[in-house]
Length: 131
Image 1 (cartoon, rainbow, N blue to C red):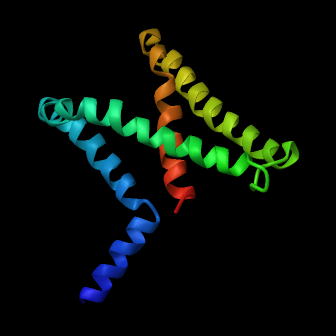
Image 2: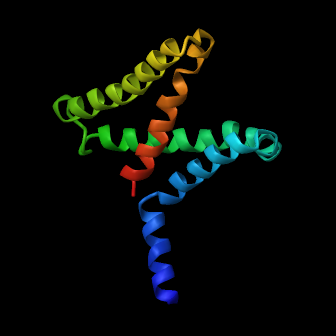
Image 3: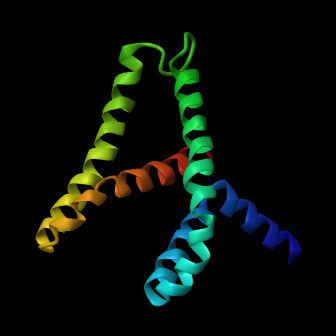
């Protein structure tokens, strides 16, 4: 029994399922008890946004530099062109969907949040690709 639990935990870690589970729990919690969610999340705001994100983007930059350095997987323009196009599409697509949904909902005040789906997609895709 202990072996199965360990294998399940390793599978969850390797496939970034804990991040997905955390996002689902946070989404449900924020919608059911906004005040309780805010009371827990607000003290963590600085640590996550100003410290954690620095390390996340630092790691992403390190990966890009290693991949585009001579001998790296994306060294030539030809090798890097498809991932660059995919990255632009991966950011423009979610932003466009967000903007369209905000306009369809008749809530132009939400348009300032267009970058949130981009950042979320980046975090989830990095978690799954790097595994």
